[in-house]
Image 1 (cartoon, one colour):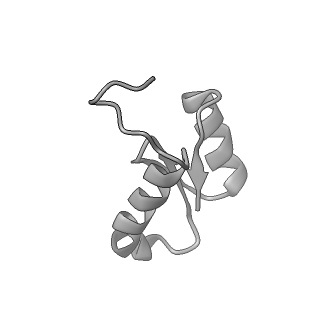
Image 2 (cartoon, helix red, strand yellow):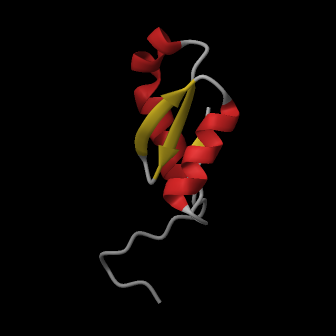
Length: 68
């Protein structure tokens, strides 16, 4: 059972997807790069999706990540 301060999130990626949308205007200058979001935070821009996923799995372990 969650306490009153712990939000219940139906989709664990919701925070990362919202962060991507919030950062989208600033990411326009990085077209062609792949952005990595973990826990609602932009963690980096990468040249290939493989680099982004590799870094994401390294940092987040089994937690969900978003690469866009």
